[in-house]
Image 1 (cartoon, rainbow, N blue to C red):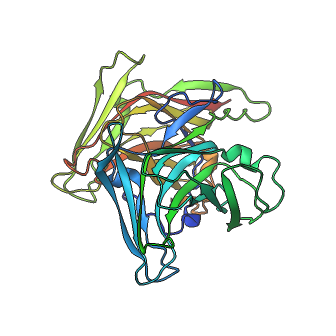
Image 2: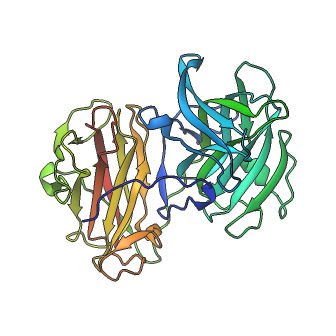
Length: 394
């Protein structure tokens, strides 16, 4: 088995392409103006290095240096900020803070920031087609925290070609990559916040806090014509799951046990890893070959306080493995929902079987892994699972 490992973010988020259509709800809370069925997903992962964001120096314009780091000296309320710094003494055009988005359709983006000394900043959003949308967004000047709201859905509603839609705080728009048509193609894949030199200083900085997006949970797809849906529980017992400590990379230890949590109904499973002695991953696999019918959505609840991503593998009827190596989760100690449609693994990372990157149902097995990159301090990540189910078309 190949190891479950995250791949680093590229400097240009237009290259962020995740081929698994996964729906995940993180950090739910109400937002002003949001509909009752809207949800808010935090893009700040407390247990991840730099809250889940990565730095890039805009290497296509050589000369810039800089950094991205948690800044405990600048707090909004009680939360540390993320400080992006750029040094353009020797040239360069921008530095950026980047992160992937776990395949949701953005309705609205909210960023708390302290102004970089100019009245605007540059934002990049990558959609499901790989098209990168770049917006210049106005921000109030001053040293205090400002709440910047970008109404992404409204910006693209009725938009024609590459001309910017009339949204008051967006002053400029351009696009490239994908179909390059200036239209939004959900779901979202990635976000970048850019910082450049200003007229007075070659070294500039920007403080970020509480970055989040408002999304609407999608409607599960209808079954094929002539088929009915039978919802089947997969969490009958830990004994029906196969635990692995990734023996091809010696050193990892772990357990898969039942646990108690009165906040949810049904069984709770606990997957724990210990990478203090090495290793790459631990995980569990559920054999689905005995199930009658083709596999539709696979869904489950997940909770963790110290793991910010999981690995997922699905094996189809040809023996081909379809993998997403690093799927972000919220390390906030709260329960969140995950929904996976095997058909949408087409074109993603794969090996074995027909090895053509196409899904051949039904699903033979389903695996969940945690890796050595989780819980960077103690190397002992833990996740909890509940209500694991599969929709069978019969």
